[in-house]
Image (cartoon, rainbow over all chains, first blue to last red):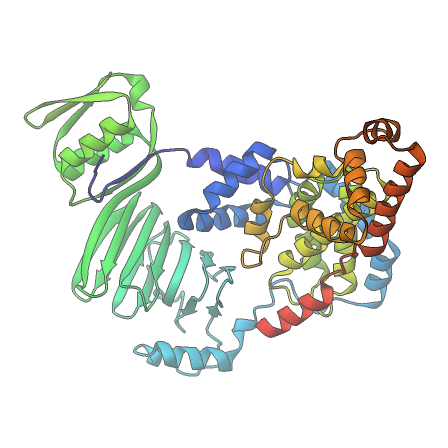
Length: 323
Length: 187
């Protein structure tokens, strides 16, 4: 079946989330090992897996099993451990932020260019993070925003970050969980392209070499801007910015969206009325990606393929009925 | 250079899935010991390692020790190697997670290959009899009857094969040295 640029999957993400969690906890079954391995072979999934792993990383100690705790105690009781800790005070702090180094940050800012005036030497060192190929870094900015920087990416805070605004320079790919602060908007600059945020979660991909930048909004609202052009995006939207044509394109993308919520969004998007035949149907969840320039008919075809439904139409009134 | 706090974090983060990996091949107690030893070795070397990619190093240490233990058992004859080939699940998954760029050689394949190689040092007859004893789990008396030779002759062939395994089955060295070099290269 041909859906044009419409991608739809019935949602099984949740299931893989649980399997991944079992894997991190060391309790995965042999059958699930196979399934997770196959699922991981898809590019997009590997990124998702690493995001889940970060979540586990933060909870690993708190959620450790009795067996792991016992093994840890046993290890701490060995002579090697005792000896080492008696003679060797730990100097290195947990998050040794080597990218704090001032000299390095100046050099990289010069490359980013354009907005270099921001970062004129000052007594206070600006925050700067950079990742290599196959490296990821997670950190929390001074305003409490959490950032997970993917490979070959960089992020630098403006010198006056947190005063009137929270502005950062960014290249590459990262997930942002921006702390809410309506007074001081969080603004991400990638050249002339920018994203203004009030408090939300999203993933942004904007490598200088990309022909299309993408922003996937998990929750909240953001404004994306290129020079004078701007676009508002809300929960579930996927925004693409074509760096060649300089045009924006918005997609509706959501994992785990309830059919009833999806219907609300489709009604607004296409200015139609949609009625859901029965409540069991309204509680179906979907993983869905729709280009906003796809026609509503395309969407109907996809929904009929995904769910055991038929869609009846009367002018701009649609009814989803169970088959 | 790994601090105590970083080491503790690494332990809680990776110990569960490394034990799960080792349990694919060994019983739980042996699996836990192998993982424990890998962490101890890492602790001993903590001044020399960089925090990047430590999980790949841990994984290699655990994998190698599993393989060594299996070889040891192959030699002393407590492990049916066929069972190993039938381990379900996916070793591939652990490679994808821990060392996505490495050439993933499955433990069963590597072990089988090394055993086959070691057994090239004995006669075809010994190989055949050894296979009957190990893979088809036939008793020396049954083999003797089937081949029409004496039981003592059967045992001599089996012992020759075992000797070859003892002599020619190489113990995998811990990849520590190799890994330091890789880590330095990437620095």
